[in-house]
Length: 176
Image 1 (cartoon, rainbow, N blue to C red):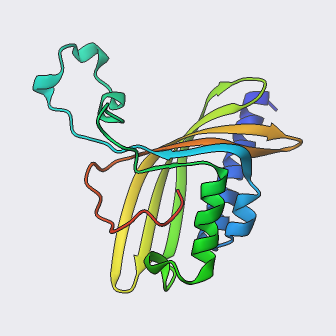
Image 2: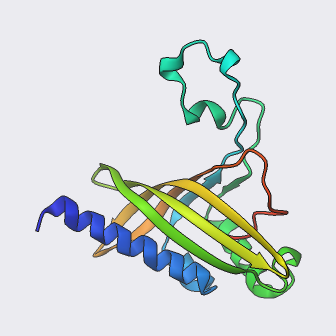
């Protein structure tokens, strides 16, 4: 079997396992998938008007992310993610009491680069969150760096590019 295809299949299975753990609220096991040096970011996104673009050959999504005066929606390290998980499991996180029902669909998985210490992966996520009588849908691109550990991976970096400049959700309490 082709090594590139084999790696892609391993990465896809890892991402599917991660999604299943999160949808099952197995946050304790999800934390075990993380590298202790993780950086987990969700930048804010803004609409850029065509009139403000001087060179359309360089116009890209990157222009809509993290402008100089914007704050990231989330910028967490391992300690912050562990704290989030503890809050979710405590029953006192108002945004998740009662817990949301969620379903994550991961697709369009591509290996974007391979280095000795990590594999760059781009994927698309569709996240449905139901709570009470409300439902919120998120779509996003995820840019991950997975560090190979034995026959598995640890998530070293996640950069989530939401497909919304204005969020329909009251909060970002779920993990992408």
